Length: 466
Length: 111
Image (cartoon, rainbow over all chains, first blue to last red; front, side, top):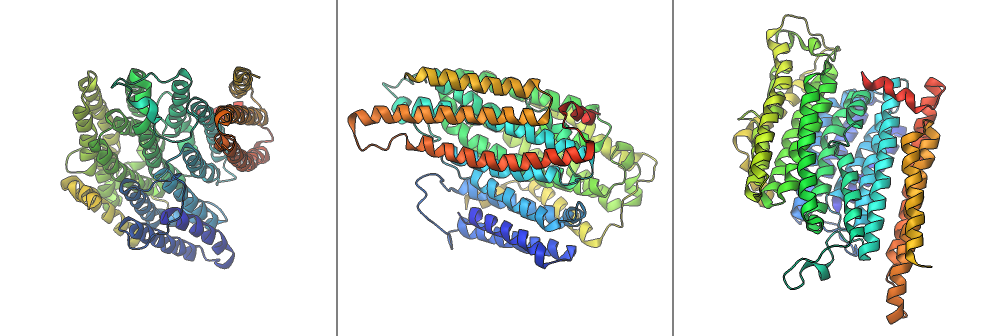
């Protein structure tokens, strides 16, 4: 509960701090302080030393998994503001508002990690999305940013409509907005009773709209345009923390409800996973711009995260946490470096290793992690996902794993193109500004986290259990 | 009236909304179609709420079953209003820069 209340309050505080504080530097510092307060508040909640509680009528249910995910999301945001704070204030004239919107997004994230009712899920997704429409269009004079925000808005509102239709049908069939399947139907004489058709259609609507939100194929088409058009700093936020939150909500809902769709969901989900991996990876190969490549790579990574939905066991839950950390930190790092580059194409990275050796080294670690090379966090994240599928079993498990590994190999091609450009091509990669000492230290910390998690993935999971 | 009529009406409105989103090119009309989708859902929720209430009312006169469906409608209205304010702001911003609200224009981002 702390995280929800604090993030909403601190968002308002940030909004008004723009009136009092005029210096852009001071606003970044205020945001960092607010984020630390939020993180501490959430940790207090997790370990039970101080938590606000009230009668919620079972609309929200807090558990360790959700609170731990909040910690991950807030920490990732903290790292993101530390690295890219200076670039956030550069986007427009009203920097305090951007941070306020980021806090409101975090409020949505913490609702999504704790909802126990479809109403709360709907509110969480909307609180998460509406600030993002604004952030996408924050570069007001830039046509690309305008287009991206309009497209994101229309797609987002459309998928909200689908979700609401699904919720309405579910309500019609069951008479409640709870996320668990109705008890009466769960076991009658040991045989699962068939769910009414209204309910199955409703669930399909809700799942399709969630697939929209996490940008899984065939509902991914808005992603590259939006990620490409949005200001790079905000793309970084959208592609990491927000996407991971979408998955947490998806898993939460799927756990209680997937059985009602019997065998249909498995077939649909397998098709979605394969299509997402195929489209994400194959299209990323042909991109010329690193930013656009990262957009497609985020679709491909979503394909891997969907494995957690397929397996639905404890290992999948641990895996999605590990994946959220590995993917968020690596992508935030890559984007932080991308923002500093003058030229966003692959050629723009030529010879970066000579001009900025530390940036190139850190970027290499992040890219290796995304590709899933051992000794980085990305390897164990992918390993956990595939192992959970193996554990869940089923006729298609082996084939899914084979396909996933093949596409992981494809992904190595386009991630290594950046590494190749940095180290083995002649060129003079230019950065837009002098790289500050603090930025370099931030990158070092993030690379360290990735490598430590790559060697001892248990460190994170142990922390989760105790 | 039987519940089917409400379901058919809501589904018809919802389908008109979806077709409008897919076919029309004017951003404001696309936007209106999305609103139509949301309002179709509102109608359906109220109808279902009344249906569930009717069933419970037959046995217990003081039953509050079905009230949550109507509550949901209020939340949808509020969220739709928030979305409208952001959406219209985005459309106005686009209009200022391009003097057009045509969605076809969005294809420029493709490459």
